[in-house]
Length: 330
Image 1 (cartoon, rainbow, N blue to C red):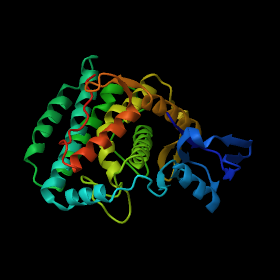
Image 2 (tube, one colour):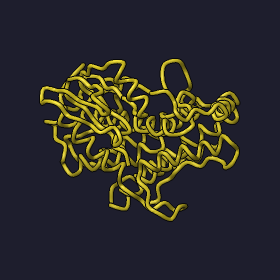
Image 3 (cartoon, rainbow, N blue to C red):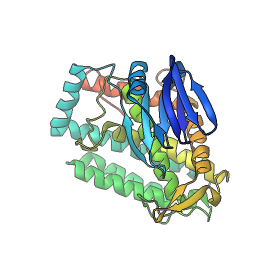
Image 4 (tube, rainbow, N blue to C red):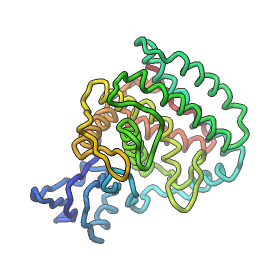
């Protein structure tokens, strides 16, 4: 399994001989390209055309984050699995209101069911989340009656508001209150964790899309436009509760993260370099955790589950099998 590389130091990334060379104030570090699927750049990094050509040849994606840890964009090499047929099918499903709504509803349904699974997990551990579960059940039951993307987005927003409001009950940590969802910048430490974790989930999903025939620019719940990739936002909705949020709960409940791992920036709160490093380690450990797949009858990693979700979408577009979102069963 190829690895994700995270670079926090300022420096230069270049091709040297037939491998990658990272030069920082700490010296030179050589990175064998055979082991890498993607590189996440958090520091200021000097690059050149020769490096980008090498990354394209080796099918390695670069994800960039600004000084505050916010995702800003990706170097997405020329698609090596281009499929005109698949792109046409994606576009057909996007342009047909019925087909698009069907897929958008599936993404929201998958997210809703996985949110409920997370809450049910903590309900079994005597956390008072019964009211949240009841409200989410009622909201989820109304998804089938929706007739527009806007209606879906509104219900999805209410589901997440209800879910996030239960975080204080789940965590029981006065140092990490939820208060309300705030972004760009996050208003407190817990919101900073949610935003940072979601960014990692989006970039991870984008990297997995690159290994398929799908076009990341064509989303269904999130509109396709000139400014961003959309498909990874759709697919990530399914996995954020069972990956990102569980990572957050682990880091906070085990008191691995403290207030000292955050700092005030841009009128908001962001993770420090040490906080980001700790979060990324836990996130990567989670992505490599295996669960037994009920259909395959064997263990697969969470990262592999994301790829398999994309393969299911390909089969849906080709008319082979209707797409059903992954729902956790633990």
